[in-house]
Structure formats: structure tokens, C-alpha cells
Length: 323
Ligand code: DGY
Image: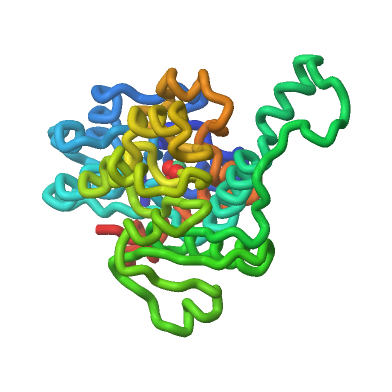
């Protein structure tokens, strides 16, 4: 029996590419250049499965490719807002993602951003590297204490809960959160986390607001100028979710006018483009979408796609089936 024909849209960890070569008739993207819409359509016409990631816009137009051969999209990543899920469903395409394996590393990046922005670590690093450090003094680069401050989470899924655990047990932080789907009391008790009735309530009380809701049409600009204005003047906004959950222009204004103290961002509206307003500001830490970027996690994500693909081609329901 011939092996299923699959195509990977970007470079993957070497061990995972090797595993894919063993199991499938695989086309790799050694140049690691993102595919154009036409190339994605071609991929859908000529392979049984396409393995995309966040940089591939699988719009209804692209998924309308004819004649369609692909019946499976094994996404490398937990977020799938770049895939038009309704269009995939309409075309009978199975979509899977990679939850669980990136939870801790993404929560760790949220911690990194909290610490970096509150303790002005980016500014300090730039100062040392530029040769402008004049030595220790009591009034130098004074930041904000993190330990004991209130962490507010918008969304309370896996990554938010992992962050709650690290913040509560590691930094003694009271945790509050808003989710439309509150968990059982026991979960909250274990994480020292208190549910709030609304996003607004979280924004008004938290010293650090961290976003953990999916990217979607509904969540676009969930944090807009009006909501930013509810945050305390000393509070920080952390975004490791998706860039368009925040109105980036409004955030630049809030940071410039110091109506909030700072922000730590790993994701951007229209990335890799970054709103130039951010680049002029010292009170924002900017990371290049690296929440899951560890050796261990990227390999685990790839192997999770392999597991989903293998199940799909064995006629089983893949464990991470989205639709
Ligand atoms: C994820 O897994 O969703 C990362 O943001 C990369 O897509």
C-alpha cells in the first residue's frame, strides 16, 4: 500500500521531519519560506494532508481549492484562528491542533514578560549592551515588585491555569480571572484563583492582566481603548494569546500617555509587522511570538501532529480533532 502524501508548510524540528519521512510520502519546506495562497491551494490539490502553522492563512478561498485531495489539516500549534474552520467543515476536512504540550512553555513566557516589563529588564539589557551603564546606584532603573501583586487572567484554559499555578505558588500572587465557562470550585481553590463576573472587573482590580483567550472574530479588539482605560495606572498588560485580541493602536496610546504602566507582548496584530508606535516606547517588552519555542516543546508539538496524522490515516478519530 502506498504511503499517504503529506506536505509540511514550514521547517520542523529535524527529529520530527525524520519521523515524518519514515511514515509518510512527505514534502518538506527546506527553504522555510511561507507558502503563498496559490501554493497552499496546490498543496491541498496534491496531498492527502497539509501540515500548516500560524503563518498560513487557510481562508475559505484557499480551502475552496479544486479538485480537493487533502482531507486533513494537522496544525502545528494550539491556536487555529488562521484556519477558516467553517470552510474546512464544509469541505469535509478534519482539523487537528497541538494542545497540552506547549502549555508550560507558553505560561513561562508570560512569566518572563511580567518580570521583564515590571523589572525593566529590557531597558537594563539595552543599557548594558550600549555601554551606557554608569554603575549601581539607589535610584537606578527602579521597577515594580511582582511578588504579591494581583494577577488577572482573561480566559481560564490550560495556559492561564498553568500561569495561575506559577504565579500563585511561585510569586505569592492572588489570582482573579474571567471566563465565560467557569470551572469547578475545586480547580479555583487549588490555584488560589477567584472568578470575576466580567472582564471589566478583572481589568479594574488586577496589577497584571494576562490574556488567554483564543484569537477569533468575536475576540478581535476584545481589549480596546475603553477597556484599557479601566486598568489601574500602575498595571501591566501581558499578551501571549493572539495580537488582534488587543487594539494595538489603542495600546500604543495607553502606553505613550502612561494610563497603564507597561505591556509585555509576544504577539501582534498583523505579525510579523509590529506597530511602529511600540518601537519608540521603553515601557513595552516585545518578543517575537516565542511562547512555545523550546527544543522540548517544538519537538513535542511536531510529534503530536504525527500522532494525529497516524490516527487519522488508521481510520481513528485523532485525539486533538478540532472538527
Ligand atoms: C500556538 O501554538 O498557537 C502558537 O501561537 C503558534 O501557532
